[in-house]
Length: 444
Image 1 (cartoon, helix red, strand yellow):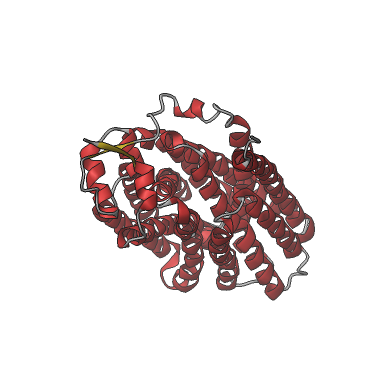
Image 2 (cartoon, helix red, strand yellow):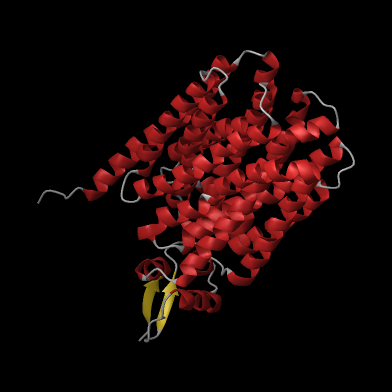
């Protein structure tokens, strides 16, 4: 007699294996090269500006082009991945942004560079949310937050490395040499992902690909000796975008989108414009890159720490408090009085709690949506975040152009960060009530 086993239950019972570690390592590396490429344009912006004799405000199209690509890539590739698989879409998008980065290094003029940054963003926009979704679906529930947070923290690690690489390489090879590095890294990681990463078992079970599913599950844990039918606990979604608003998910979806929008606005405004602001304040290009990289390095530490804090707790509440602390650090950044050391400390703390929190809401979003619409849910939340990133890059240009000084500029940025905290606070209350209701024992 054939028994029936739900795929998610089989994976949750499996011990942590070398396959899980390999999965986290490759997905984390892929996310890291995403972070490197996304952040590097802000670090090389002063050199690009110098080569083509441009004022600071003229750099806005360079920042926004890549972000428009990120937005479209996520919107398009999320539903495609729910239909054709997370791995194939993720790898294809990784190769796309590798090729576009190589092409950017040979740009003859600023307009060509802007176009290449758009194509680079298109690839990253498709790769990043699918890497998050793939990692979330592969790992057991009991350790998912920590392991996925470690993988997702690759984004801030890559962003921080971009600052150090720029500081060390831009003087010798110029911004074009940095772009070459930005093309080599994703090529290597994309080849590794294609060779070693399996497809998501959740996706394979939902799509009824039994033969491939068994091969993947056998790499996680020994299959049962008796005849076993592995089944999905969900059906394929006919309209994944519409399903984001069904079954009581509408308010959560909207609040998550608002949190993503404001969070990414703050992160990209700071990472894109801090090197320019610090350079105009008298810092060398090297020091400006190093101080800004502290934002991403802090995000790495904060993301991993929050992962441990989120497991077994109301994750939305944990991340909401972290955003509030980050908002306070951003305000302190404006009150630093121009001291490079004080600003460096404030940048690090704000990165720990703002960039780290962004990693946290990526994970919470992947956990909230069912598998049939998970890639779409993560992709659309990421896309709203990218829209916020575009707004942040453009708003940064406006605020810099107004020459209002550091205190009001960073005060505005801190206030926007508070909106993310409040949005997640509402979600924390909603989740807390739902958990309490689920745990309540009816009176006999």
